[in-house]
Amino acid sequence: MNKVINVNQADFQKEVVDRSHKEAVLVDFWAPWCGPCRMLGPVLERLADEPGSTFTLAKVNSDNNQQLAMQYGVRGIPNVKAFVNGKLVDEFVGAQPEPMVRQFIQRLPKPAGASANGQTAKHNGQAPANDPASRLRQARELMQKGDGCAALPKLQDFPASPQFDASQKLLPLAEFLCHAARGQYNGRDDMDNLYRQAADAIRRREYSAALYSLLTIVHHDKSYREGEAKKVMLGLFELIGEDDHLTRAYRQQLASAIF
Image (tube, rainbow, N blue to C red):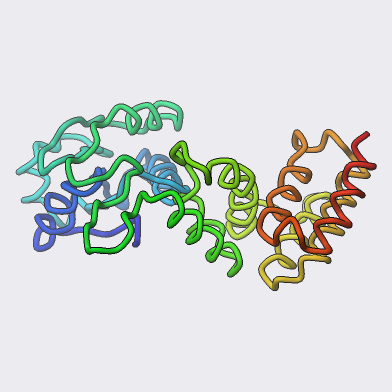
């Protein structure tokens, strides 16, 4: 689902009011000539596109939708209005720093049509969307395809269950793959290059090459990014299985490297 959409008078009811019964919708009233709008817009878009985002960002060009802006009392821009359960529940005016925007989002109420993990509740005779075994299986399948961003929501806020330990081992791996897909490891240094190589290898299911790159990071700098490489390796062990020959070989090498 696209988390950043352009909305106008014609589709506002469907894309904002109706959608807000399933997840919060932030409406960004802006204009191309507005300097503060150009500062705030990228912040809102980045937060909307984050893994596990709980809202959709609807962008409304106030110059092209003056009647809509008047209807909702827009007197200055940027003006961000939050809709939940079909109603305007909160708003702010002016460019705000990212921490303030995050706090604004976090205090929004949950829509009635959303389940506890932020997903739309569905009952179709199949396993519930929040079923731990189903969630873990889907997360594994997504990461085997290299799609960490899609796997993240299924692993975050994982319920207490027999699958919980496995979910927590896989979570750093999903985060790593998602960050890599979003260009976090852009070759600023040798470690970044190794991380990028590892992520590329995982997406190709070349797990031996990935584990080699990650183990090289552990050997070179055990404190680098607070042990991220070690956590990703443990997640990869969980993904490919404890009985896999790569897991057995690299687990022993990892233990030797960190002690």
